[in-house]
Length: 446
Image (cartoon, rainbow, N blue to C red; front, side, top):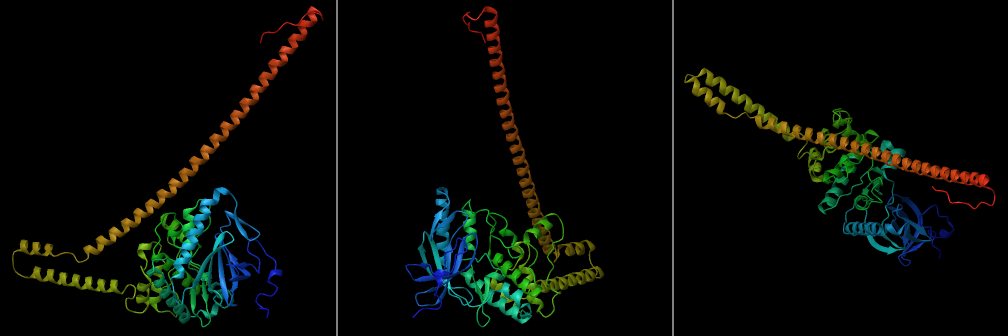
């Protein structure tokens, strides 16, 4: 009996570098049904296994350094061999790490194999649209209760991922599917792409960030990436669900702050009705520009929105306590001033009482000093980069001028030699004419 899923697959045309429908993989265990999407590092296909079940096949295909002959992946240049092998190794390493994860909100990887000169991973097929498509087709479905439900599910998934020593690195609406029943599922981890872009010069220029969703540290080569980096991307995704658009590009935010301009991000707290203030405050905190100011872990975020440790609550309690201590100190000072005794001893006793707000003010000064130092470092980096560009431009202009000078000198030398030869011939004929035709030629001195 013919499987309707594979009938006439071979007749469907191939669009680009992707494998054509009907291609068998892993010794016939999988058959490509159709192309799904592609990026700078790989191609994704819908396929089915030998039992007819739908699966997703992800192919390691860094197009900047490889091409396809028939079905086989080949290098564009032999010089790419080492880099290609490194990318394939990173791809397989991530696939093995994902294969050990088992969570309802994370796509499952159940096989890794090599074929056609590259590596593949077979993943669960999630029947359902992604959040980005839903934002365009059905934006009204994202009521406050639905947004909160989705965020809580994804925080649980991130907590599990982070506890296993991994980062997602590519959270955005198009990488979150809604499975049947509305279960959000994280797909397309970006850790291998990020590592490959750092490890290989050929792929270093490939865009591995998503404007609006990636934190500023993703834009800076060599910057530390932490759990809070994933939390920033999740908060940016939630921001899109709430406001209908992503927050401002974090790189633009960083540039504004570095130039002593206001951060263009507009906080959600107090501006969006229908949400628990603690939920919006947690989003705002996770979207702070610098990692040290964000919520540190998914568990901390869940605790905040569950009411166990609402953002700002501890700080408010501390402020109340400081106010009460200040009032107590003031009352004590008044009492001592009115009471009989030696004024010098009373003054010394009052001065010995520590200022309860001194530590807080010192901490605030230290914090802003650190921020200013960081901004100054960013300014210096920008100035250093601009100076390098100017120096490179000057060096290029100098080399061009030297090349033009060399070409001009060569032309002058050739012209001079030609003139000298012409003059010698002319003198020769004049000499023969004056002496007669039979006069033997005499060599002319140069």
